[in-house]
Image 1 (tube, rainbow, N blue to C red):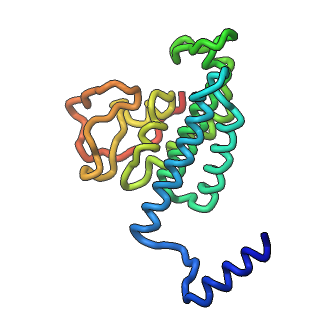
Image 2: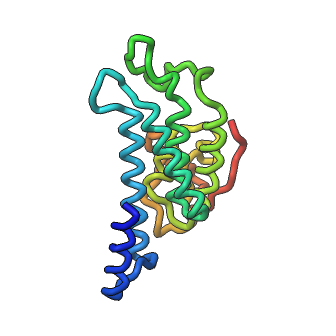
Image 3: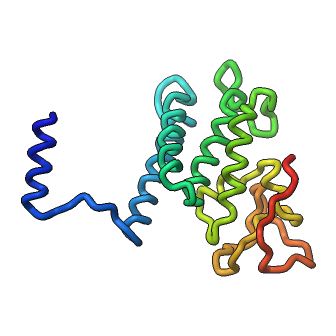
Length: 196
């Protein structure tokens, strides 16, 4: 294997090619693809598509580990933090998701004592930090859905946006549309609220 790698490197050098890191739009596109693959791996563990098990925690943990590695390299990227937060907040509920017979338990009927508080705290911290980004992506928005301490970020109980151009409408953190209060300014900025 080492000989093959060495020969490949020599061919690349002879051709005048390089392994430089992409920048600009190419970098963003590659990162988007990497995050999507990590999301799919996690989903494969969260909801197994084949076999007798309803979930594969080993696969979900691998996706979390790989996403942690990406986050360590890109700590300022809001979408990377949002994806990691989404995974952690979802995985935190794993033990309460199913009955002993393997049937799914609705979120509002889950035994919260079985939730992993450490993962919830870490995920909540990540998503709150990622909401400071000038534009929000799909993983950040998914991670905000229905979590105490995130729902309470704004007095009006919705995600507040830094720039009106990035606001897709009044997206509620509880998963249901909600109108802003009459006195709510349209250019409100996010500010942390009490954790609940």
